[in-house]
Image (cartoon, rainbow, N blue to C red; front, side):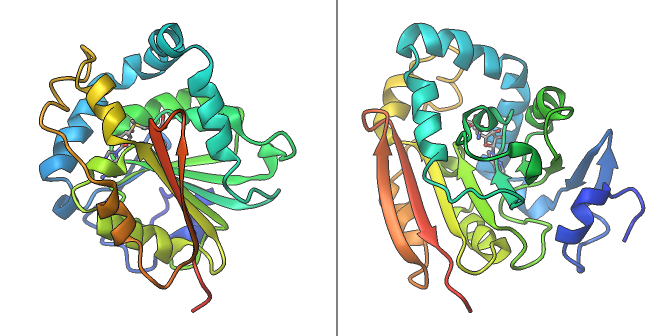
Length: 252
Ligand SMILES: C[S@@+](CC[C@H](N)C(=O)[O-])C[C@H]1O[C@@H](n2cnc3c(N)ncnc32)[C@H](O)[C@@H]1O
């Protein structure tokens, strides 16, 4: 294993990583497989790299002016759908700036968690690093969700918020999340509904160009979750603007 790999990540990494894709820069591990940096992934990576400096400001102020505390309330409810426990290993796919860590259930000692966040946008990860590095045990990896550099059965909690609707390969990202989750883990996949994309993203000055042709179908995501899972449930939050699908990985 290369000696630049941040120590907290070593127990989670696959043994067969392609050395051509791996590097490290200022505390962030990169595993960038070019096969998954094309099409929509390339488009949204560039979009979020540009948006990163304004992302938290947008939710904190523009979002607050329009929706009040309801965004924070939605994030709090979403975090409660997961089965948190102290000392868990946690993977957040598409962590962005890591906003959800503000909304963890109160009974969890967040400092006991081994947190790993991945994102295709390095600029979003840099924001997360700035906000959380002294507060949490958080390791960051710049990679597409479709090729996670982690070993099978590695994490107690695995979840994704806010990007999958437009991933280049949704099926593969879901398969990857299931692969790296330990047996019996409850996973969650959450994102905006088509109504919200139309009413917000396709009208907002920052996002309307990137999302102008965007359309997604929730059943495509639901159908990409294999039949082998149990406890499958689709929750609608924030007056149907957001969906969260939870499902459990069964023992092999
Ligand atoms: C709307 S933001 C959500 C960020 C964060 N989860 C939140 O709730 O604030 C979408 C995120 O998905 C990331 N993303 C988009 N496509 C991705 C992919 N294929 N793999 C991993 N992350 C991706 C973007 O870079 C961005 O950070």
